[in-house]
Amino acid sequence: MRLEGKAAIVTGGASGFGAGIVRKFIAEGARVMIADINGQAATALAREFGDAALGWRVDVSKDESVSAMAKAALETFGAVDILVNNAGVTHLPSAMEDVSEADFDRVISVNVKSVYLTAKHLVPQMKARGKGAILNVASTGGVSPRPRLSWYNASKGWMITATRGMAIELAPAGVRVNAINPVAGETPLLKSFMGEDTPEVRARFLASIPIGRFSTPEDMGNAACFLCSDEASMITGVAMEVDGGRCI
Image (cartoon, rainbow, N blue to C red):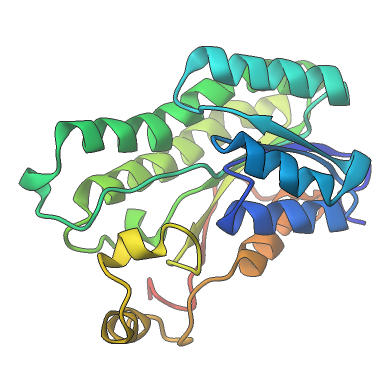
């Protein structure tokens, strides 16, 4: 029960890594708002946990949507102790000059702007209370970029730098900010990262991961739980690779 008595928001929480984080947080005693662009999926997952979870539809790239999410969470929980910025998208593997402007704008608005918007609407109440934990789900692509995912890599590199900047600014206020860098996993984005999902492509991808398997939602949940718990009270500004050795 490492998160007993704490309330959390997990964006992109209805599937993939986000759902793994939600399940771990609730198992450890937290109440969680499962915030996702797919409101039906968020509500369906929340039903599994009864009063411990609330499903909410949010578009993390829109100020008014993030504002409504924050307001609902504060009204429901009284305070938000933990914020997990997990929602993310990618463009299909492509030469950098061939990525459409629409796809570029979508990657930046969801992966980058969302971190600004959630901070805008949730950091003030953390600062006022003198405590809080923020976790940004970045990527190994922000540390060791893959070819043909240039703008996705750049968005995750931005998130890592933002994590460090947020951490140093918010430390005096008692708010910690960390990131995790997953390698690709069995999530809805896997096919987009690989371009196509075939045994041959999977084998090439797995060959770059020394431990020899993809990340799982459970891996992310375990790492996120530690970094957001009081056990990590001396850890801030870290971008932890949860990648089976991919970045070594």
